[in-house]
Length: 400
Image (tube, rainbow, N blue to C red):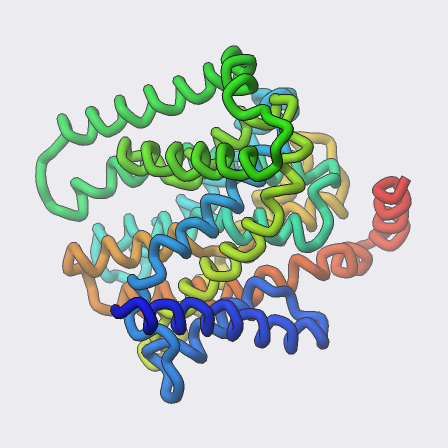
């Protein structure tokens, strides 16, 4: 793509996402599905103006959106705050994965599309979108809610699970007997995660000396470089770039510059996150989704049931009430970037042709439906027996 064409496509993408989101915001719609809708409308698979003919042209910039989202999440929550719940957070995340991944695997076998396809569907149905969940907590102003730490604990456990899941799934999809390669991938991933965790725990002084400066310009340059470099190294070693960005944010959260970093990263997070969701919409082909409409509808219902069950269990493990259980269940409902990764792997492996449009339709519905219903979770909680009084009490406590 020529430079002029690339700049026009990039600027047009930003502007289209902003205009659609602004129009939808007037009737109370969240920005996440609207950014995606803009990508579908102005993408190569929809008649009319195609701002970007090849979604891969925005791949690097869209990835920056995911990196800054997860980096911000890490900076916002210190290591001590995330591990203070200890085993309960890990247990809640494990229960969530077992219920949802297990349900997705069973659903895949019921469809009868094949064993490898069922393994892909297990990940698609079982894992929520870290990017959407993070953006949702920020947009709804719920980062300070007591149950939000549990929600973040769940998605952190999910991201760690993803590193292992992808390492196992890749050789299975390729049909090769590569246990040694998988074991090496495990080793690299674990070593990297352990190194970052140790740095977050004991290397804060070193990182503090590296990044702390009175000059805001230099601080932005430093933390941007660290976030992107760590994400790239994580991706190279078989760990998701998202968790690499999250971990470096977690490390920086304990430095003296953390309050300024939180403030300075906001515009970067918001701008590039819009492109991430816009690029997500570019990859969706609306016509192909009609042939798998019924499986998509069944999977959406199944996911809602599994999320409610997992949310209730997680809330009880942490002594939360019905209002927090509803918030947990609906906030982690959305599916997104990881499902698209699996769709790409499925196409490359030559799996059942129905799988890719199914994943696109399923993710689109939940990415649209999830934020909408999550934004009304407190209203839904009021409909439960005694929910009005509990919701009012929670609202008063949050304001105080």
